[in-house]
Image (cartoon, rainbow, N blue to C red; front, side, top):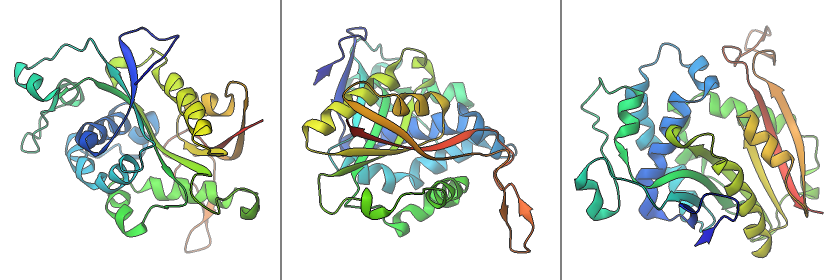
Length: 268
């Protein structure tokens, strides 16, 4: 367990494992759908509550793959006060009810009655994500495939210069989310820096992360010494165009206006 020196002492960083999967999935779904301007732009007509319940299930593979890696971290509030006494015996509980279509974002947040407040998931890139396992989530959140595909296409590097050739070389980050009721406390940045130092101690030479949020891009492109951060590829969703099946240039992600980046962090 790590206590962050410059964070309030009530917050501690701990490794996450599969026992946290329901909490992690809820934070991921709620943060994306209710507190990310890009996703709200892409999904203006969607019933976000129903989609949150759906993503809770379809994100299982992505969450599980990273939780089983042993490299994912979570920030816990050690002074968390349970809203429902029935949550306490198990250290917390998610009370979402898929049969309740009327719960709004605030109600869903209140039903996340557990002390995990921020997540930073990761996995060893030598063990890549399985496309079949990812398929359900990409159906739930279609822009995800486009974002990662565009960033990959714009990546100018020769794969031989950076990709891992064995375990313990390049860590991939995927899922950076903080609960809405704990935003603005710097928890994301503190966990990012903790992961940089931990991964270096574990022998990793680099971390790669795709960022869908300006503060996340800033943190990973401006790491503390002795690390060096680079924005490898980027695009603006509002203006980036590609040819469609008819040869017409279209901005597939143009309903939202967000800078998307791929960052790569190494030791100097």
